[in-house]
Image (tube, rainbow, N blue to C red):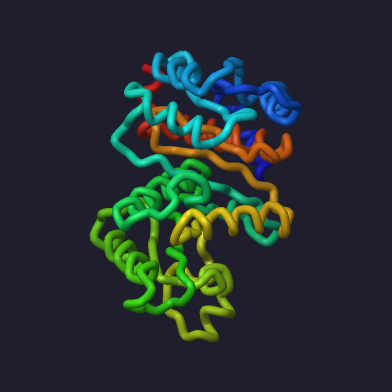
Length: 276
C-alpha cells in the first residue's frame, strides 16, 4: 500500500524540502533516502526560522523536522506570516495495516493538546483533505470517545455528536462523519453489530479523530510500536506541509512521511499558492 503511495508521490515530482537540523544519523539518512527514492530535494538548514523563511519565500515547498523539538519547529512556522492560511495546524498519521486496502488515518496526535469544538472541526476537515489526497474519495470519519452514546458528563461525546451534525449541515465537507464511536465500533463491524449500532462509519472507518492529543498520540504509538504498522505523519494547515516525525522514527517512517507531504502538496488546496 505505502509502496504504491510512494510511487504516486515520485510520479508527482520531487518536493523541495527545507530539512531542519539533520545532524543525527536518523534525520540525515531519512532525508537522503527520500532524495534517493526521488521524493524530495533537500535543503539542509540549521534553525526552524530558516526553514520557515525559505518556505514563505517559495524556495521550499515543505519543511521536514530533523533533530529538533516539534514545538520549536511549529512555533517558528506559526511566527512566519507568509506561511499562514487562516487554517489550524493539525497532525495526521497514516498507518499501513495488513487487512486494509487503504491507510488508516489518525488525528490529532502531535499539535493541539485539548482541542475545543471549533478546533476539532478543523482537525476533521484537515484529515479528510489528507485522506482524499491519498486516494480515499469519500473518507469515513469516526469521532472517537469511550462510549457510543452522548453523555452529559463526557464532553468528548457531546463534541462528537456536534461534529457529526456539522458534517450533515455542510460545515465539514468531503467525507462521511459520525460519532461518538468507541474505537472497537469504528474498526470492527462485529463489535458494532453486537452493540446494535447503525452507522455509515462503524466498522469501516478510514479516519479516527481522537478526543485530545493524549489519546491520538497513544493510538499512533500503539500502531507503530505494538502493532508494528508502517506509519508516516504530516502536519497540514500551513502554506506548506510539514513532515513531522518522532526523533526516534526509523528511516522508513521518514520516507513515508515525505510521500504523504508530496501527495498533500500535489493535491493543491491551501498549498497551491506556495508555488506561485
